[in-house]
Image: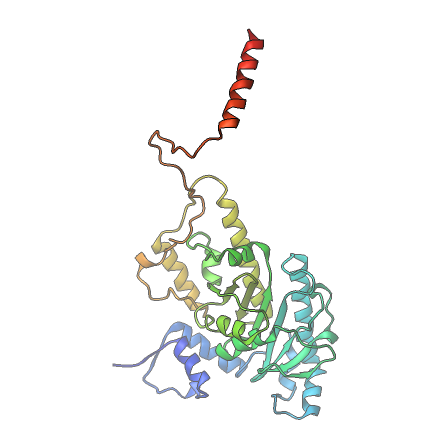
Length: 346
């Protein structure tokens, strides 16, 4: 029997340092695996971003490159374009109130083991290209005048665990974070854009910036591209570019806001059928976006037992009301006032 190779198989090979281009001729590639290989052929082990046309002319650098080579890359037009992208995404996050104070952080992988990232203690709405930092995948700062973000370890652990992760965005969008604080998984089978572009999971709370927090998030990124961080916020990753990672935030926040509004309308919401959701999952898989529901039976796709908007608890309509206890003095006072009012009325 011929071996079937999926995107996950290719990712596992990359983690082991094996050459995914040297597969046997008789293997069968899934459609998403073929797309993944085409991406690798076009961008090598990482993708510097669509708005950096000068990247190809810059010598590739790693954490082992000389200080001169690292500084040359950090000051190059290609790196400058990526810094501008990060500043642009930061402004969008700030204008949409997805970040407050100096919260949130952004990173772009620019080499096999290095990444550009945002600085600490700077509002995402007012960053400048010269504020950016360059780090290796262990979090050591290689370039930049300002200190790198304290939460960079989480971004780097995502990139280490998920070889396809080109860019990561972390912020605190209010409606999405509300689900994270409540520990409630957003329900599914309601809006097509959410089903196609997002795959959400919840990571338990740990102190932000610690390796423990990064590990809990990284453990979920094989099958999810957007992680709710309990009592904290949201982080997303993209295999395309930093704007796509940001899009994941817009999609999730709009969805969570819509779900919360729908839950106040007093009736159960309409949902897709399993067959309709299966059509969307087919599109999702063709785009190379992960989802743990791939391969499930249709009857298993729309499991929303935890919470369903529009459904409220109610007392049983059996004509009886449980006696919850009375206050004798209050009853006497009400009776006296009632008698007084009735006497005046006569």
